[in-house]
Structures are given as structure tokens and as C-alpha cells.
Length: 429
Figure 1 (spheres, rainbow, N blue to C red):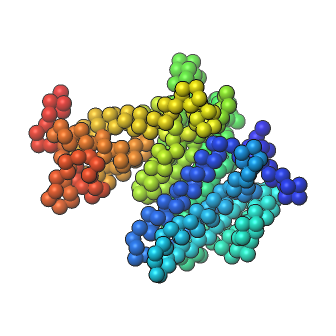
Figure 2: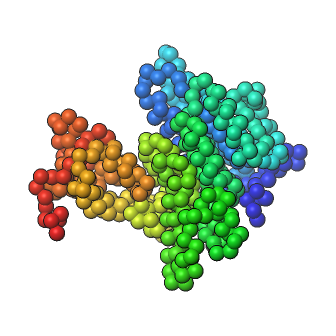
Figure 3: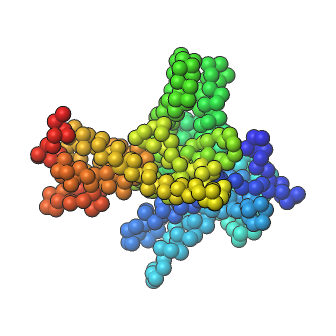
């Protein structure tokens, strides 16, 4: 069953779909990121207000059945509105002069039935009076609506700051030329994109129609078509991981973003098809915040991009869904510790060599240079530098060269990392 058939809303019949566990994880990431986004932007207590635009390009009807129909789960439009409200309330605790987040919301769906249902949900949640004021529910194909949405954002006097939520039905609904248009047109834009990578790879072949599908989304030139048959014959499973690398490279280049992080999500079932939940941004800080959230919800990882491991969520490894803890499989709780330790070990060997090749980098400059090549967040990288500091392989000073750091966890963004004057045997081999 296609995704757009599975998720059906019908207001007159009172029909709305069930929510799957993997979609709830995606919604939780959206909720947490909006809250973190506003908190980080307003971390300076003297900022009185900010503007933000949230664009949901495939919004659906706004509500799902959860827990086998016993309760409702609200979709990304309501999640976005309430995440902003929650964060505003939190940042104004014990303040005499309230600070504001002035938001515009654009909820877009190609199906009239979905928009009609969403409007009813918005009214039920007390937001009906805001329609066509700061909430816009638009029946349109996302790519067709994009030019007018961009114009509306540019006319918004408070900010062009924008978060696009593009939970597309397939890998081919949003060409990367459209995403590049977003980044070229708007200051401080970010994109969260669903990309059905397994579905794409499953049907990858040298047939003209297959090439055309990738050409339509601007990724055709990143696939080594002439080698595809050889890869499948000689590499069996590994060829799929190789194609993932080509696709990841193409997505970053064609999107026009500077930073990308990938969270893979695997639905439940015996033969699930995984998809990527991709965050694209021009800002390193945005990338760093999203990585922290990915680690919060990851319970699995892929070896395919080592040392840039893909962190992700696998429904079949969620003991709250599968009840595997009853059978002695509770070790999944150790995912973050085991995985982060592995990356720490890898980076503790790789980074000192890079520091010798390119000395006098600040910690933030180093992180920016490696952001697209590792899923390690700042905390993991700092910990990976602890051993080299203790062993005397590298030295870390504050930006004024007055304070020398004694442990990795104390490193600040502006600190300078330099090779030790006394090279160890490790670096002379």
C-alpha cells in the first residue's frame, strides 16, 4: 500500500489513519528540534523577540489514531504550533518583560480532504481564528506552492528564518533544485527531509525510466551506472552501502546546504524498508543541535559510513514496542554508550593525525570541517580528544593561550588545538 493511500483523512466520514511507532519518533525529533532551535537562538537574554517561519510541505490531516485507536496523536502541524508555544512559555518563566516568538505557519497538502481535516483539527485545538492570519492551510503541490511561500516569508518583516518540514510520500516528490531554491532565496533556512533510500536502491537499475526518476530529482549523475551491474554481482550486500555514500554526497551538493546529518528510520515488520530523515542547513550550530537530538532517540546504527556512522531508530529494536526485554534483550539500552565509545576510539586515532597536518585550529573550526563526515556530536569529539591530551599527543589552550586544558570535556568552542611539541612514537612511525 502506498503511503498516500495508507494515510487517509475523510472529514465527513470521521476517518483518520493510525500512526506507526517510527513516525512518532520522527514527530518527536521535530518537536525537540523546534524547541532547541528557539532556545539556542534566544540564548542571549537581551533578545526581546525573534521571527520564525515553519513550512510543512506534506502536512496531512493533522491527527492520527494511536495505541490501537484508544487515543489521538497529533501530527506535525499541531506539534509545530505547540512546540513554539511551550518554548515561549518556558523562556518567559520569572520574567517581568515577556519575550516573543513571532511565527508564521504554512501547512501544504495536495489533497483537499487532508486540508479540510486539518482545518477542523486546528479549530478544535483553538487555532481556527488564526487561519489566513499567521496560519496558512494551502491545498497545492509543494513545488507549486514554494514560490508564493518564499515571497510571503520574504515579506515577513520580522525574519526570513525558516524551517521546512518535507515528509514526502516518496523519494521523488521534492527535487533537490527546489531545496537549493530555498537556501538561495532565504536567510537562515533549514530543511528536514524524508528520503526513502531503501525504496530507491531496491529499484536501482540501468533502465532508462530508473535513470529518469533520479534525473528528475537531480541525483542521476551521482550514480555510477556503468559499474552498477558489477557492484551487484561482486559485492552482494556491500554495493547498497556504497550507493548510500554516492547518494549522501549528491544530496548535500545538490541541496545547496553546507551541513547535513542523516538519521535513518526503520519501520517495524519482517522486511522493513528504511528511510532517511535528513537535516540540511547552512549553519554549523544547527547541525550540532540536531546531532544531539539524533543521539537522544537513536537505538541502532549503520556501519556503512564508518567512521561517519548513521545513527537511527529501528522499530524492531525498540523494546517498548517489541517487549524484547522480557526475553533478555535489554542490552539495547546500552546503544548510546556502546556506539559513542566505538566512535570515540576511532576518532582518538584519526584526529591527532589531522591536527598534525593542520595545526592551530579552533575546536569549532575542527568540528565544522568534520561535521559532514561523522555522526559524533561535540561531546563525543571532546571525549575522543581526552586520551591524546593525557598522552601528550596534542595540546589545547584557550583563545588567549593563557589556560591549558587538562581534559577533553573542558574544551570550549574557541579553544585552539595544536600538536604537542614532543611528538610521541605513535606519530613518527
